[in-house]
Image (tube, rainbow, N blue to C red):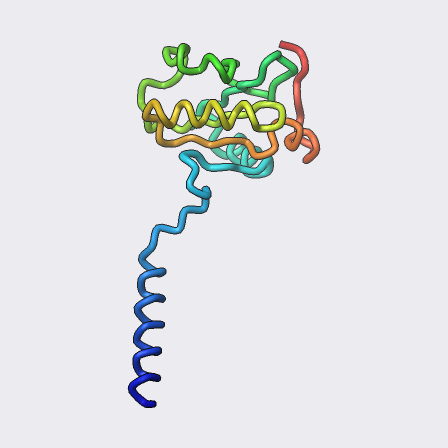
Length: 137
């Protein structure tokens, strides 16, 4: 009985040690990170010049203030010349609800971009959180 108990303790320790060293992916296996409207607002306030903010929604319905680029989600692979050449550059993508921006993020990841963020809930969530939104181009 002591051996059985010892074996269980050892197995539990091995399992816990394995979990401690595992890469716990908070992105649910996605090649981009979802960020909240509050997180994006903080990024804009604290380090706006350190990332490219891209609206991928079509048709145009408006922009988060200080948006750098509007590139249709389904044409982003053809407009790479507008994006940083450095594939490690931080790029934040958004659209109305986040479906188009997720597609664009996936496309960019497949093209080798590594520092991608998606505004979770899109500009609908951004506006619902009380952040400003510009409807004029």
